[in-house]
Amino acid sequence: MLQTYRAPEMIVTFDPRVCIHSGVCLRTLSAVFDASRSRWITPELADAKEVAAAIDLCPSGALNYKFDDSSPDKADS
Image (cartoon, rainbow, N blue to C red; front, side):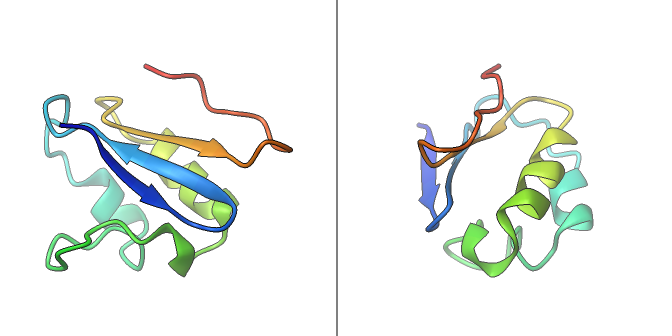
């Protein structure tokens, strides 16, 4: 089931069926991606561009984002 996490500037989605558990997100931006929390993705804890840059490093494409309507989107996998 696709998980959705909203922040004021963006929406982050995570598809656990696609994730290969490489841990890149956890190591890249641990303030936002923290598997020890029940809400493990908290995009509001960092600048939206930083979050987007970390998501762009996801090797499986399990993480995606969309900025608000005035910003460009990341291509969906």
